[in-house]
Length: 149
Image (tube, rainbow, N blue to C red):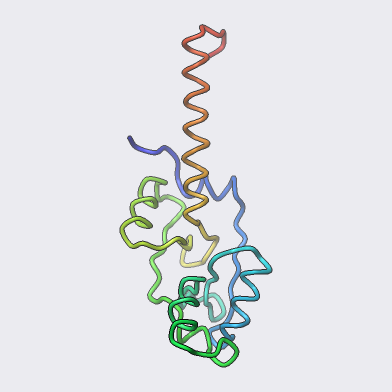
């Protein structure tokens, strides 16, 4: 079953807030910002250039498990790079395949070379659930013979 919708549609519903930090920021700063913004990943950017992405998973695997100090380690040392990105024209279906295949949870959205947002696996799942609810509602109305459907 193909999932209808595009990243552009999802971003219009969700909004395009982008949380980022510089590559020189410490891992501690990144974790504090993730907690404050209630997100699981941040973009690592130098001006408008996307350099990488740092996630809670990067923190757990590359700092805690390796006995590094989050206050002394710059995010540039633990970020994932290069970053796989999507455009507003990517389908929700394509995004689901990308996050499943690569086993990560966040996709930066890039349009005309500029980062315009971030899509998480949670955003994608919410989109799918909402679309399925709408389909069910329409089918129930059709079966019941409700006028106007």
